[in-house]
Length: 315
Image (tube, rainbow, N blue to C red; front, side, top):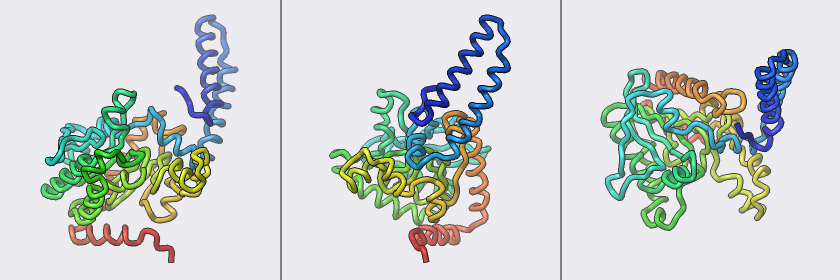
């Protein structure tokens, strides 16, 4: 598995261990002692590296091309998924997945940004950057969830809403603003999980939820580190510095009361064990839905309103 820059020592050691194992099998020479020492060294190196990640390194992990996406989580923790298409106004947006599914036999509405694994799929999915019709589709499905009394599960993973001319002509900012307003009064339990990138209004456009969780190596921010660096220092190379001052990691967001929970990932990131990560996500969803289920609609909306009104209040 190709690693990020800060993972190179880990990748090189993993490669060396694999080479020794192959050599031992091929030559029938017992190298188990040497391999055991290297594996112990690898374990300690991983713990030291991933226990002290900078904000920028977490951003890099959040963008890892092998990181699980929305459709991966749906297939790993849900069943009977039926995708719903179109906003009934313009068209369908493949950067935003919406549909019906079952979570442990419970019917839910699931929504999420979807990126691609290769260039062709990324062009099809617009790199996870939704158009106005994507946000309108998400709202249409959420209103359906309210009508039928179904909880809404949202997976956030986008660098931001698509900023192209066509999207602006079709009302990108208006679509997001309407979602913010309507989600605040959508009388059904909503849980949002940032599974990768949580960029700007593109993330917040489906982020007004009763419970907001962030995966350990994801980020949630008003702007990307590169965008912040370009504005503040006129230099995109200062993105690592910007990542630190933006306070965009789960740990920082939890301290500021912007999110409710940080969901743990396997050592090295979600892409190293997608099944384990999905299991952690599922546990968090079920636990939070159980807590939200006991609230009547009036109390649910009251607490949601209070949650977002309190963001930014330090006194």
